[in-house]
Image 1 (cartoon, rainbow over the protein chains, first blue to last red):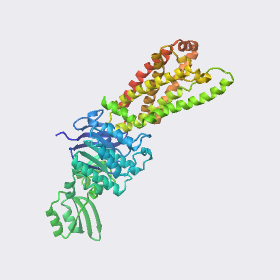
Image 2: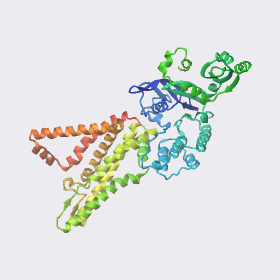
Image 3: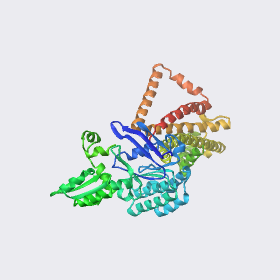
Image 4: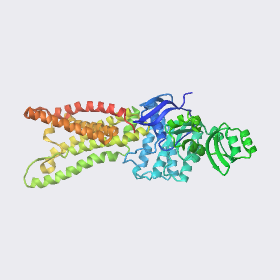
Length: 308
Length: 231
């Protein structure tokens, strides 16, 4: 089966700044991917290259098996809701929806109208007069109603309140189950989307540092706390991501292929075991202030195993 | 082709705006000229020729310049290819030019029939633009629209790719080129010959032939520029 996206050794440089470095990815059809990472990690650059809005310095990308650049057959199947999308000044909300209706073959006008009501977006308002939240809602409506086989949402929730964000997650899941497609959701609100996404792609300083199923990732992470000696003994079972110590006790977050037996072993050592959230893992993997080049020279650093 | 038409329709979604700017500005220019001329004609000055017609061509230049900075990123964001956007813009410009050219021709007919709207005003029918053939006359009004639109599109692409510095560099280059030409003509004492060349050109050559000769390379240049545009 042809993957929805195949990225091969992709590098993007802006002058001396490397936005993406040797990225290799395969995204399969009919799944929801979470593209996570800090500001400036390279998420938007990656999506812009995948939608032919930007050019790679080296390497290649294929969308539905073909290079997307100037490829109408591919581009008409891709919808990219960019946080910084430019809308022509004189367009009203209904015009922006009308434009999407003209170019997306699967556009569902009824769905768009019901979403317009859900998000209480005034159809006759000029797009430039919309608040940040309303602008995000407009993007969400276009992204959902276009029913493009490959849909990118780049931080689609900016300015949206919790209720509207939940509405977005609900509508996305419902529509996804009726009309399966490949969705790439780039976001900072990891905890909010962790129930939604099936596969996580974590990008840090232009490199992919995590590419795994969310279920698999969840089991990989464990935090144990208790007497330092016992913690040290157990910590050998995984890669240490984070440690705090206090008066002979320690609390350590580990990453490894943990099974229930490991939990039992920790308990038998008198340790307290906590499951960790996806957000915790993302923070642990990307919070390091060190540059990737330094991490490689630091022989036994916990990062080495993480970087692929 | 259906996708090109879809993008044309996309750009015409709020079509009253597309019509209102050029014709609104032309109409206000007309009103001012009409008011001045009706004051002058009472002082028996006689027929007046105005340059107000240039305003509508300028609006088309600006419209295509802006289109590159607003419509292009919007269209590309909706999965339209650069080539399709360029073709759609070209198709829209050609249609607009023919429509506007025909309308200007009709207004010129009205102007002549009403003796310059009753005040001997030459706003639409300018003496140096007149030909005896109606079809050629329409093209005399039409083709300059193509030139202004294509030029606006190309400058817009330069701005999109290289920003204000790109446009400023282009402007400096143009000023230097014109300055150099003026210097060379002056030094060779050939101004009479240059003036003579323009006088010798027929209306058809000046408003159809030469503009078309410029439109083709400009459109080709835009084709190259748009290929590497990022949004």
